[in-house]
Length: 260
Length: 260
Image (cartoon, rainbow over all chains, first blue to last red; front, side, top):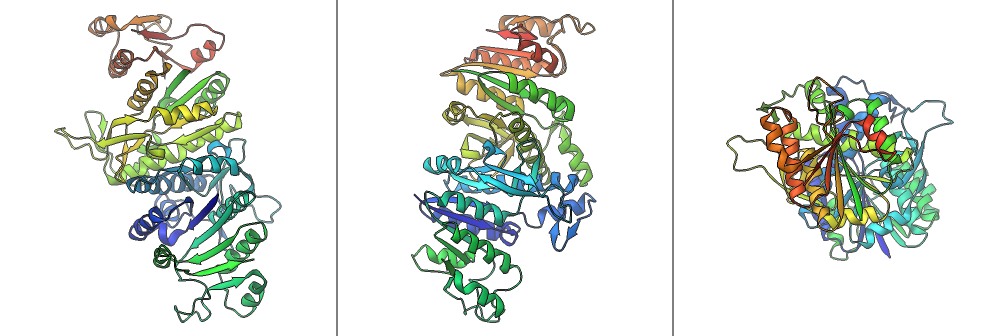
């Protein structure tokens, strides 16, 4: 089957209007769809409101026990179920999931690291057949960035990584496109010019674009993930924003497509 | 098929040891199982920690917008997914759900009430076939007390009512036993004597037991719900506590069984 995996991050999740707009567009996209959402600011805000000091190391969150509880509540509770309810309102039969549900993403607490990231989970295995069964029933899996270790421990897991691993697991038997929704139209040749979208990047060109400073900052890990996903069978990766995704409904090519 | 629906409330959910004990017992019970859990004190505690004043009317919570967010986070997020992860650790393939997931419990905001209970949901319909499909795959639905209205609004819904409506919906085609786990061995003939459990109550006897002051307080609505469930096809209702439930694994009759 053909499957589209969409990843949305904090920019969309934190903004009720943008989230509503995205859900409307997603509901118009035909075929098999999976949505992976990130967390956004709600968890940090909740930690602050609850007096839990955020612990970070090099921009990565250290998930202590109190923080884990907050991220599970915010991501798997409020954000996940709000998205599901809003999709239902568009007659999209969504089901909200974490990796613990039906044991579909098994992970382990991050190890072999000089820093203890706490309850941060690195993925061991995605159960592709579980997702296939859901898609076959025309249901949309809505996946929160929470996994588990199979021994009773929930784990905080990067949403980009989850989207990638889901896409790769399904790519063994299916044609999978992976969409990263972010705030730009696509990868820009000139970051000052929103119109300078590079329509297509081959993975052989990625290192060169990083060297030239065209792929920068937070986009570097995204693109490196994308590269690995393409090398593992994912058909294509599309980086774009909501407004462009809307245009894709008219069969326009939008954003930046990364291909093997 | 034969189905057992279990309802656990705050006493168990709030106490990590009791919850763990219950999950261990549940994992040993054979056959088709559904778990409905209540909320417990975590939501009230979170509201207090966040400075959201609890609003009550005659002991019932009024769910304003801020409170709804908290109960969805606490019930559908932390409690629900913690239970799922702990069941997975016992090789029980659980899936955590709200009524919004696959639209399986449709409700409406409570109306025709002198008091505005806010985002409190009264159930319209439970999709029994959705639950059947899950049970057929040997999965355990773990249901949080959150529903939706089909128009994008999540709703706070009483867990006892959800357990009842699930049992009744499945009873059309299946043999359903409904277990209410609480802090007593069963309904006591003499409330001072923990050993005075009434083993069996026929629904014709309920009013008399209420008149005599044997069924009292919070047990009255539970038993009246039970009566309605039995009149609508549920095979039997069992009221008991965890320790007794454990004994039932040896095929002992435990607690109080309410029969038509």
